[in-house]
Image (cartoon, rainbow, N blue to C red; front, side, top):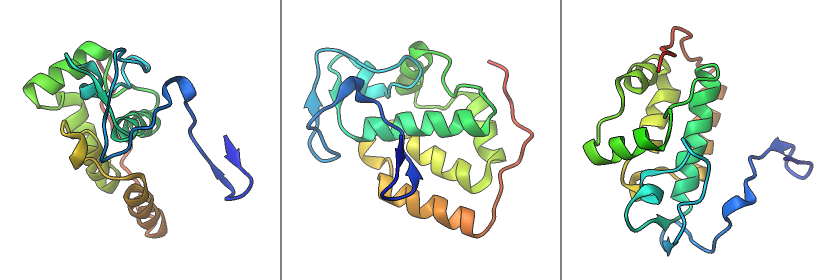
Length: 145
């Protein structure tokens, strides 16, 4: 969506609206969301939702943009495995290194612990500084699954 008030594009997904916030989780019976973009806590035995699950999904989208269409996580199974072993897949680790400052923010976004993920406001500040300093990511990325 484009906001004429702010002059910015916004990502909108109304498939799972909730009253949850970063401090107050909401138990959900359904692990709603799009496969490959759902956070580990949504795929657990007792799925809970906070707005930090949206930060995870945003990270997946940003990764896909920078890595030219390659998904960070091939499917929910890979996300579950990451949640269990707590080690990012090698492909993601390599690409995060290649993406410089953007990659550093993605490493935080892909934290297993939702409370350790950055807020949308802090991401905006970090990414604005990256843009202001005209820092670009490398283009030699690993796209194989």
